[in-house]
Length: 217
Image: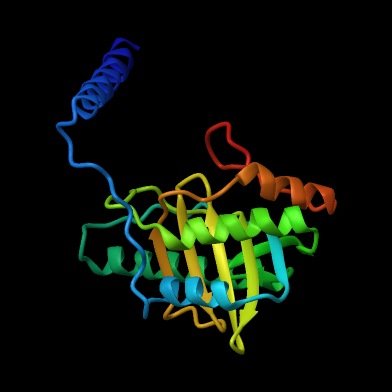
């Protein structure tokens, strides 16, 4: 217990030192940048500006991998390689089954979706999209994204799926279902998660539970 307390205190002190340095103006200011125009994120942002059609808001449940048996044997040995291959096959079958039980959006189970029509609701969704797509910070997170919100729209004859992870502050863009050339990236701001949740609740669509922390995605 003492070790954990010391570690927690160390983290707190590190944060406070960093904060103090920042307050003194000794750190380079974080200035978000726009996405490259030809990137999936940049293309989605441009398409959004030209779009005046339907917006569909999704509630998503991220894929939950099964518990895997331990990989035994010395690294690089035949036994070790066989165990790795076995686990890869288990994961592949699990992912296939995950989306066979219902609709998926970019590998995430669809808990429900709603066409966003009300003026205020549409404004909130558009804000979330513009901020998530349009501002790229000069830092990255080691947090593994779990996308619990998604927005789909059509512009210029192409479908854009924009997935949002508020826990990690990340966005994923898929154009016309092309997963291989999709884009994942850090966000600087993402609009209001509470506003998107309110739209889903109003449509009686369930929300996925967050995997950690107290925030509800």
